[in-house]
Image (cartoon, rainbow, N blue to C red):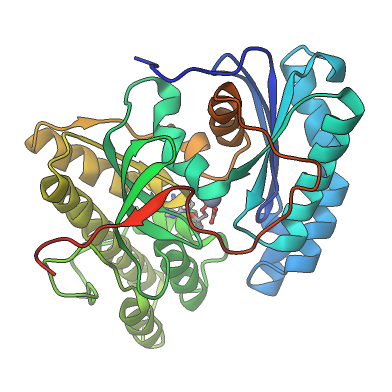
Length: 346
Ligand code: KG4
Ligand code: ZN
């Protein structure tokens, strides 16, 4: 498929918005390498991400990760033709490490620089396999964001709905903490849920249907309360399975409803929570029933990675867009070109 045009020449992507230090090389839209160094082992002892510790770890990891990405792509630094870097939204101290490094490379090599919106990169990541192209409905579910988008093109996004409180990933992470399952919570809940009974506990779905918005704070409280009264590991697995089933059903049902609302015949899921196997199978099943085109990125492209940054960067660079060397880092930022959409039933 691949109708978008990419920058010619190798693009180095850099991602340091949260707790993954990542560098990737993309050549004409194809991934030549994608190296991700996760800090999750570092932050687990604090029960959450400590921004200053994240930034310092990025400083330590950044250059080795870039060197590894170059080595795996069989390139030397002087063969890079452009640099794309996440500059928003995220932890500003963490973002600064990647942005400063990207600027140094762009300046020293005399090559173009482009700052990329992290969530735009997630929203475009379904296109990376070449199986889907805009327009499509995309559920973007990560640790900090949960949004339903209508992706009509690059820089052309309607926000169909979003969470009013916690993000879906945050709900997984907080529930895992209540259940003593460690972090990151999503994979821990998924593993515990494997041997659990998803029908054992009835948990709140948040907002009443029909809606394209989400609310996970009631679910978080219900899980914390129920967790305090569990007797053994089997109960923990049952609660993990019930929680996973509730979150994934709500996400999948509203994503499929969003396709009806905007009349879309294509659907995808992106962001760290899209790595969840239960969510992937619910969306797949629903899409098949509705005869929708569906493509979900492979798991390593759902969680934070620099290949998606290089991909979004390569498209924007090909359009002639460039960032200056005074490129800033921003903690909160809307998607470039986003507009809000009010579904008729609300
Ligand atoms: O997109 P991402 O890697 O980082 C952010 O931009 O936030 O998403 C991280 C989130 C975390 O909350 C993590 O628990 C969740 O994605 N996650 C999962 C799974 N893998 C990662 N949630 C559910 N199931 C998974 N398998
Ligand atoms: Zn992310």
